[in-house]
Length: 470
Image 1 (cartoon, rainbow, N blue to C red):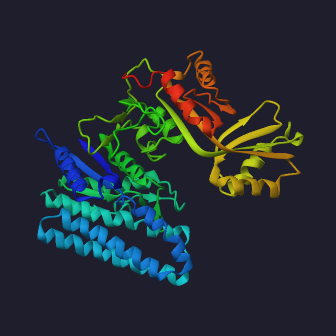
Image 2 (cartoon, one colour):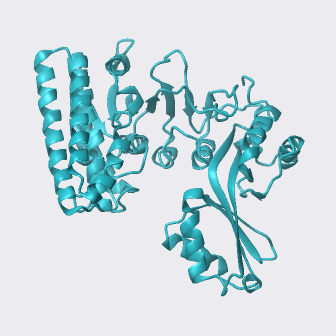
Image 3 (cartoon, one colour):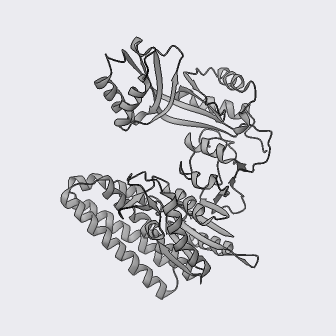
């Protein structure tokens, strides 16, 4: 079997954790006397990417002292991990030399950016790549320390080619497939475990790109699709996807299995632990995706696949998206005027405002939109400057709202689901402000005041019996 194993930063940042994942790799490499082909995809150590992002301020201010403190911190964290994990003296020395060389390169780039007090999307992607570039040789040499053949590579090295949308790059799959196969298949035939940086690719001009936050998941599924892997494992410190946010619902349960379509809905509506686009590469080829806890191997985790057992529970999860705001625009000029919505959304798109949810009545006199609260200021400013008093006559805002989404492929064609949902919410004296449901019937989303969100989620979780074992 060809198995892709992605390890998140939360399972790499301590010697005991790193030793645990090395044992996991060894056990999957040789299962009951059968040798499997293993590819490891690794994230940066926990917290490192956030620390790199925090450098943008000091870089713009030309603050050399902050840069020096950061680089010294990175050196200590990574060298200490090598010292405490790799017992073979020769391997330990080699790993330290490699990591120190990468840190020196990192220092040079940061010094250059501080000198000009400027950081662009392209240079930010290059800087962000160093988190994974520092962790991958440590994992590689830790595998060698356990007598496993291993080599480390960046996503660029193995052939992941993307567009030039820095920060949220998308892979060019046909080119990527040819290059990844040419690089990885000979290594697997030699019984080598490649350790690949997650999150990182390269555009067609050779510039480093990144795939977005949590992009290591995406890297793992891209590679799985390229080499036609049998399984993908996403290893972290959680047992799997849950029926609800455990900070809201005490008895939220881990889902044993869900379909790709259900998982896609959950991820798009804010479920954690999977990159929003990570499902795309493996859906068509039906490569099972498994979310497992590296520190709780007795738990089977969540399996995402097309072939899901029929269950009595047609609802799979209740998801809450917080920190959102409701923006309503309207006016008589919008009625029967073709292209009105396009003008409004184009204005917001040009100001990089993402719309999470939309509702428009048949009267066409208003459009309601839900967006991230952080984008509210620029959304209002852009609409006021370009459209207020012309196409739209009024603009109203309701801050501190939440989206509650009920997800489940079993909802399709079942009569009375909406009635059951809103009756349950009404019993808790929760007012529904806005509703949206697509024709796929995979989800039903509605907006409530943020103070009512927890009550709504708890009520629905209980109503649909999601706390009960399937």
